[in-house]
Length: 48
Image (cartoon, rainbow, N blue to C red; front, side):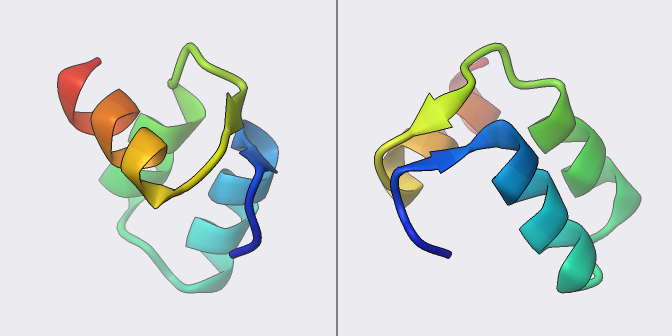
């Protein structure tokens, strides 16, 4: 995954890598739309 990445890219990458449906759903439900790195994604997913 290249950063910055938008939410659609994260969801597409997760699906491509056969991520669990719960993971894909969680990514798709993120409020933020752009992420500068994996740490930002992690914070958004786990801290809502």
